[in-house]
Image (cartoon, rainbow, N blue to C red):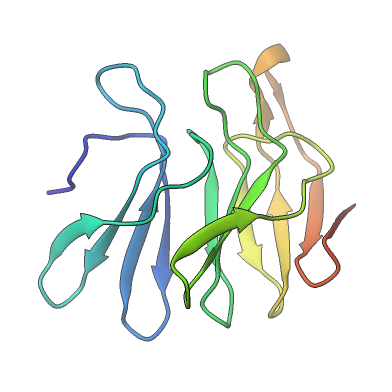
Amino acid sequence: AMLSKRCGHGAAVLPENQGVLVVGGYNNDEEFLSSTELFNFDTEKFSPGPEMASKRDNCAAVVLEDGRVVVVGGTANGEDIWSTTEVLSPSSNTWSPGPNMTSPRAGCAALPLSSSRILIIGGETFSDETYLSTTEVIDLASGTSTPG
């Protein structure tokens, strides 16, 4: 079982059989979470992971070729949507800010395009309940995001 009850979280399979990183979400106490957990394939147990800078529910997580994990978008209160991203460095096991997306998004999908580029697909803006058909590409190398 996970260490925390959560829904609306992101998850990403880490390279080289390192496990699965579960990020953020929302719990039964109506709290938005910045905590993370790591599922170990060998022990089939969860352990605490590094705390994100922001609480994020309905976020997306993606792993790049070099092992960095990028978490995008989400919400921390069910109303305001984040356009921010966070990047987990595998060498330091710490989060740092990544490039902002061009549009705030929650419930979107994220897919790696290359070693530093990520495709962000769809999502929603809770404030006016608009579902998005738009995409954008985040480039970690240049620190930019452009409409797709």
